[in-house]
Length: 164
Image (tube, rainbow, N blue to C red):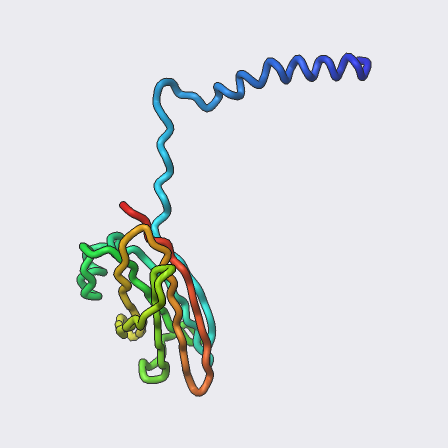
């Protein structure tokens, strides 16, 4: 086939295919369902004095009954739970006295304020949790300062809190 004929043939095929491609996603009269925004779950990691800190956040409304009860978190209020997991190089927990954590949190654009972190020990592993109450929608910034054996590290993360 000559190049001019190939070009004409391709343009005719394209003209026939485009309307069919436009209909390919249609399933009748049903309207598209908007995507539900992903709820807060931001993570960040750092190392200080031979231990690894990993932070993660979760909308308190998403906590199951067992977790909410164990950590004494009121799920009826709006906000985010911050979990700080602390492990040594072997994946073991460390003694709570070996680490000092200071945290602040704020819903942007507000200034951050101190956030209390409470130690929670489960199966010999001590983690730390804090709850920041905020009204959705909100972008919440967390900053944690960690000190261990004279070493210091900063860790920060921002999580989105969406209306339900």
